[in-house]
Length: 241
Image 1 (cartoon, rainbow, N blue to C red):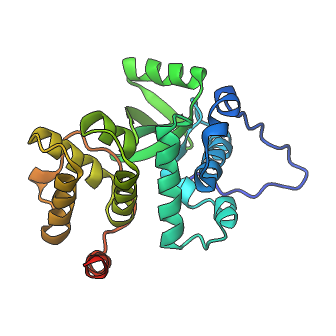
Image 2 (image 1 turned 90 degrees about the vertical axis):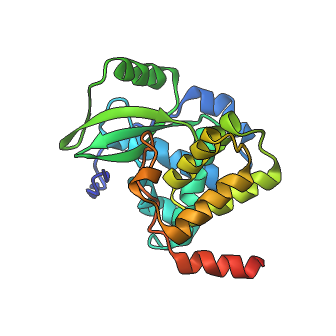
């Protein structure tokens, strides 16, 4: 659910933006990708403004943030910008700077992000143990699950990531919705085909032939980053042939 876009008066009090101590003392020194750093700081800022407890912000709100767009020197409507932001989010989740959660809001699922701190992790665990509402602006959002990053999901279920595999997953994130990649990894595990080549073939098959109801994993969470564009997929295939 998008964060309110109210303009602040120049004299309005500034929101206190708490940055988790773990991030400042440990993780920030490990980050070598400016995109990941900018996205992480944007999540901290937007979550502080969201008015939820624990503080969280939707993926859509992060992608639509005008401050972040200016940081990347990109137009907010640029598909390249949204890809860079979503990739940064996945790296931040993998580094455990932020926590990726799935909220059920008004009958559909949304990815949200919460700054990673001991207090916030404990709050999420309490809500998951005793499912209830996550109050957000104007609605009751139910916390359905926490979700690992695409990279963590691969390492846990398929194998160790190499630089080449990381590049291939990043390319897949530009072409396919995140929940497609998650489900393709789960399918590889189900059929004991634990390698990226199989995951890639599943994604290519879905891109060409579509996904029936039977293909959609029951535990799949999250909305598609962008509508899939088959012409873009075919163009990439031709250029790499």
